[in-house]
Amino acid sequence: MTPPVSFWPIAGIMLLAGIGIPILATWNSALGGQLASAPAATFVLFAVGFLLSGLIVAVVGLPPREAFSFERPHIFFAAVFMLFYALSVTWAGPRIGIGNAVFFVLLGQIVAATAIDHFGLWGAMKSSLTARRAAGIAIMALGVWLARKPV
Image (cartoon, rainbow, N blue to C red; front, side):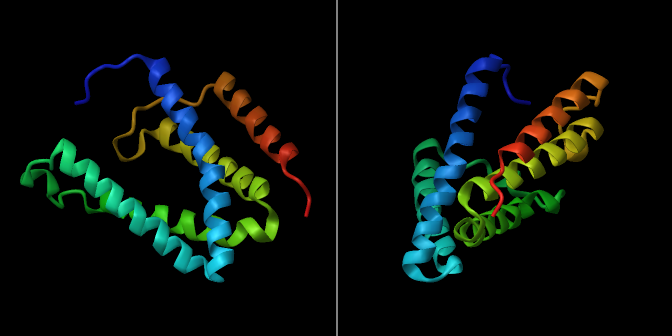
C-alpha cells in the first residue's frame, strides 16, 4: 500500500507529464525524420530511457527479489503499450501533425481511463461513472474533437 499524499502535488506532476507527451512526440518524430526510421528513433528513445532509469534504480535501490514474481504476468506487458505509443506517435506525428496525433491519444486515454476507473480494472481504484462524470468526459472528448486540425 502506498502512503497517503496530497492530491494537488500529484496532479501537478501529472500535468508536467502531460506537457511532456507532445514534446516527446515532437522530438521523437524529428529524430525519426533525421534517421528516416520511426523504429530506430524509438529504439534510441528506449535506450536513453533504459540508461536513465538504470541510474535512478542505482540511486534508489532495487526492490526485493520476491517483488519480481510472475503471479500477475499481464502487468509486465505495460512496456508493449509504451512501445506501441512511442512507435505510433513517432510515425503519425509527421503525417497528421503532432496536435492531431496527441489529441487522438488523449481521446483514447479518456475513454480507457473511464472504463478502468468505472470497473476498477486490474486493481485500479474504482470510481463509478456518474452522470456528472459522464458529462465532464463528454465535454472533454468534444473539446479534443474540436481542437483537432483537419488534415
